[in-house]
Length: 141
Image (tube, rainbow, N blue to C red):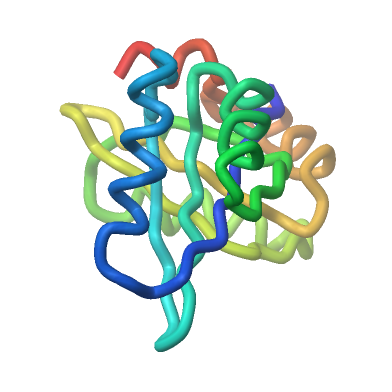
């Protein structure tokens, strides 16, 4: 249920993100989901990739600062209010959200979520019969 996500710290300059995707593509590593957050000086590129260990190694080899963190992913209906219901579960369990990002390829939305307590989040989602998504399932999209 836990997914290893890469966070790559990038200088905020043209072409830097292209370098990351070019390096990963050249070694046949697929990016299933990503998000970019930026400030005026740097950005954090968060990615779910097909081989996190190899991606981390090759990016570090190419002078990128890379961290691996544990996230989870879940599915929710792609309907108004569905995410709100999920967030209420976390709020009532007093689980803090560090960040989330998602995509909706059809009738379902897939959300990647980093909380202050990943295992408690999994336990709460299982208790509420939420659909948790594994890394291998994310790679199919």
